[in-house]
Image (cartoon, rainbow, N blue to C red; front, top):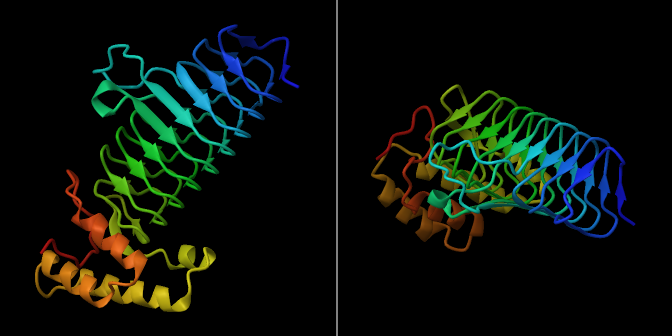
Length: 266
């Protein structure tokens, strides 16, 4: 049964699923859709064309779905889609999309968005993603499944963060981060692979060994990057994570790829 606190303000045009809980002093706007089991603890504001998926919990003072922080936004009917079973902690902000970015900001399932983290307009965030305290995504950022962003990190607009990647705390990420990679620094550099994350997610030893070998070959100093990628694909054709890294690097990107401190563009 839906439970709405007497002090909450819920527009009659909002769509509420079963067993939704809306706590004290929350505000839910007309275009909002809350799926079954959504829990707004207290003092939460959800506005705009926003959908929140089953079982997601939103903590006090989060601002979800307000107009994007983009001066080019002209009130177009863009939306914000948040998946199931997310935990959205205090003071988190998430904004809808814009005409220039496809009109939709998407957040996947099972994410953890810690205090003060920010998902800007037109971001595409995968499943099982963690944004630690005050981690921020600028507009049009893509974050793959199982990626982790450390506290106070900041990702530049249009950057891609690959699956299973790790961004160290207080890092400024100006370039794309390869899948399974680990970056850190005030201007983030590739510091290796997210080996701990791979082990936690039960990648077998042989697969991890091949990823490490492929990583060393990709960022070696001999040859050009296209040549090294071709060599790696020939040697590790059957290794899916290695293929994913190579395909990620080969995609044309406006930001380029984070390199190791001793890396070169080739």
